[in-house]
Image (cartoon, rainbow, N blue to C red; front, side, top):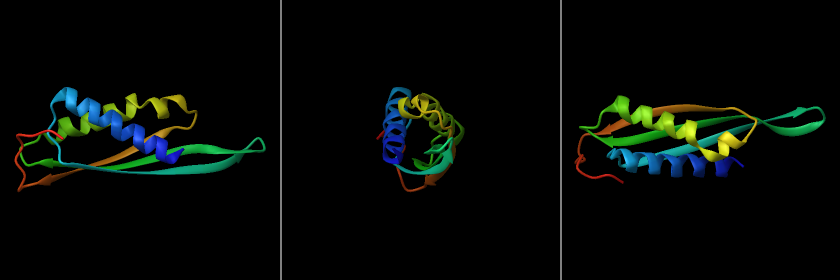
Length: 103
């Protein structure tokens, strides 16, 4: 389940970034799932999605963050689950990279 959340987030971001022509270099995504027993059944109660997006130096960080947040809101897997997902995103700037390409 955790891998499905991570994969869905990454694929959703890639589609949104491509459509928005956002240049980016790497995206690291880690997901932690929290389990709890409720009404005698063990189930996921929350998901923490931690992402680090590396972008070229001329990239608008605010726009990149908004697109990460949009990916969280549009992820089919997390939208299908009862447990909430919380995004913790950070942007890193690669000062040596050219901003002319999108990944």
